[in-house]
Image 1 (tube, rainbow, N blue to C red):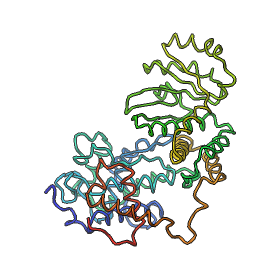
Image 2: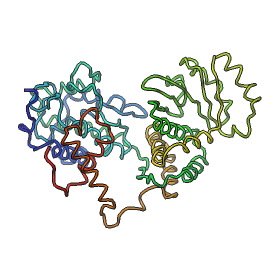
Image 3: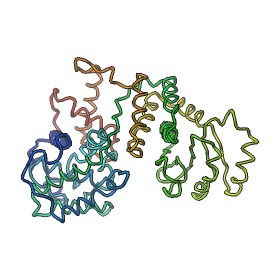
Image 4: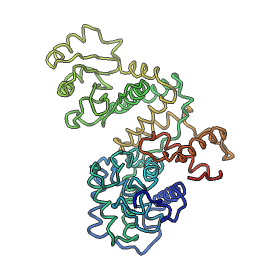
Length: 441
């Protein structure tokens, strides 16, 4: 019956211990590689292969992009593998589901799959496949629009489904994910406290000293502006696209878009070359029914006069009905960097890395340049590892543990409205504090 205690039918005493087992199972599956145990499990049936290919979806693109359905399916399959039996995902009254018609802990484990397994291997990943509130009423609720995931849930929940078939599906998904892993260098952990403005300027100068076709300029500006807007609590955010993608073909109004939710609020064209090259690309801004546009280009402040702008911009602006601002790219970056915290500056460079990992998988030298610069400036944490392997801030960890236990006690550690940062904190401490006594659920 809905609301029954699922632990009565589980081999685990509580969600925390099961989450830990599922997370370890997923990590092991990627570490050893699918099929490494030389088991006698058969190949996927034709039906299962079709389900698998449907789940992969955008992962099959070139370049590949994240597939929420594949991430969610692998997460859900892993729970069955940890339990040693096929869980029924279709029936909201199933003994395998909690009172919400979901597997307890699914969201937390899905987040960890992305953050701890996929992202470190440069595999395209979402922030977490089961974060959407559309899953509130179960995986097949009417508001769940992901047809691939619905198909998988129905497939897994067939009464005749076997655990071996599910294991083969999980291995197929893991194999597909691993085939999308890139050889790009890993981004080391960054030390946020070291990202002073002067350190940012050093990193920015070195990063942009060598050409990248405008990629590094576009992504760094996007990262800085996104952090500035996030700190303003305005609800605005910055999105960007592959620097090589045409605005019209990509459906974007500009290289950078400023949005409030899904609503487009502004657009910025970014170039590492001449600002004049971007004038003809303002048609996308006008087509998006915006009244203002920004062009960000280098060497504008000292080399371009107001008369120059008026002569070349005004005719186009009048024709398109736009108020066009032409700004110095580096000055715009620096103003944005001056208005955010050290931690936000570090996050802006992580944003650059994520864009490179997503759009420039065939140019690992760009990511290597970023990594080398951050390491050479002492902004990465590889030189502050505790040699004894002990925690350097145990008192802080204890406070974090109290937060985790509070979230668990209140049964909100995996709630859809709990901020991701708190859920990640709970998940991290779940893994890092095994030496401490377990608190009851």
